[in-house]
Amino acid sequence: MSRLPGAAEAARAIAAGRTTSQEVVAACLARIAEREETVRAWAFLDPELALAQARACDAAAEPAGPLHGVPVGIKDIFDTADMPTAMGSPIYRGHRPAADAAAVAILRQAGAVILGKTATAEFAGTHPGPTTNPHDAARTPGGSSQGSAAGVADFMVPAALGTQTGGSVLRPSSYCGIFGFKPSFGTTARAGIKFAAESLDTVGLHARELDDIALLADVLWGREPAGIAAPAAPPRIGLCRTPLWHFAEPETAAAIEEAAEAARAAGAAVDEVRLPAAFEALADARRAINDYERARAMAHEWRTDRDRLSPALRKIVASGLAVPHAEYRAARARTRDCRHMLDWLFDDWDALLAPAVNGEAPPGLDYAGDPAFQSLWTMLHVPAITLPTHRGPNGMPVGIQLVSRRGADDALLSVAAWLWQACGTGET
Image 1 (cartoon, one colour):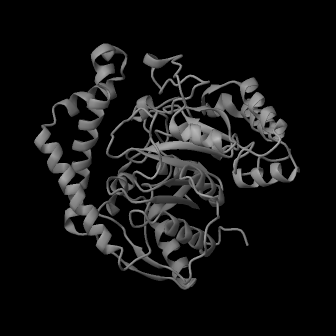
Image 2 (tube, rainbow, N blue to C red; image 1 turned 60 degrees about the vertical axis):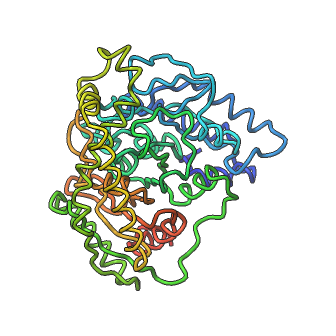
């Protein structure tokens, strides 16, 4: 196989007999053998286990489902019954769960080959794993779904699962130059995942093709895959610089301005949108909610293995334990108010165009980048997607972000596909 196809393309080729699951998996394993020493995207990989799954797919009398034979990577905080789930921590090294996480089981039911477990920051937090950016090994791939984003970007696997508590799907996807999708909060089953912050954590997707995002989303949501519908008319797009605009590097500012101009030129209604002043308090609310919930999610490890947590995580847990319950409830209330205000705002817009990241991936591996431009929308429970439309001054990817109303995930994907074409980056 000369190149690794995307998930949808691989599924079609396998179904049509133009290739086999074994050939696709073998191509993944060959790429990993070539590049893993540099990229370090995988926390666990058993080539024979992956090939055994592929052989079973090829020997099946009927396709199991729409992902039959397609390899997928799984962030190493999802439980897997046949692979360790270490969660980026020495505490769980070699840990073998009794069952698959719900999302993993759903993928298997649809015929997917679980290729392996992708590297994660410690407990999907801020202490990074070993993964490097596939475009420049001296730069971070972002966190915490770093292995999923880097593995997909480096053609090691067609698609992968990640999770987002702040910016852990969109930021690494932007830094690595792929599509990253965080659905509306609560749309995807989370059973069998180690929580970071229970009221924020969302299962997300990494892929090199928008069609692959739609395919995996449909599978996870229990729908018959139908592709991405074209909008009935050019969309109404609100240009939302957010209260964080002063943190945007020139490459991010240019990406947003150029995407807005491309949308206008293609016929979209594009106008500036200012978020209400109340949204400026969301950063403080997020810290209170994140730290409070993470401290409680880590109660067992804090009690039994505190010394084996990273200093960064110990600091967050200690901070969370110090947050008064009344402060936590007030932060939740402020966030709910902003969600309702945003619902009203979307009466006028199909999607908002906003910065995805500050700029290019920062140099070094100790800092995974600023999550602020992504965490704003995570707090609001809206669907968000990053499109790999631009490059920065060092040739590194810089994505743009689209967000839409809570529950309007299909509409968001429709606008994303339209804008991808308008920016001159989509296939013709």
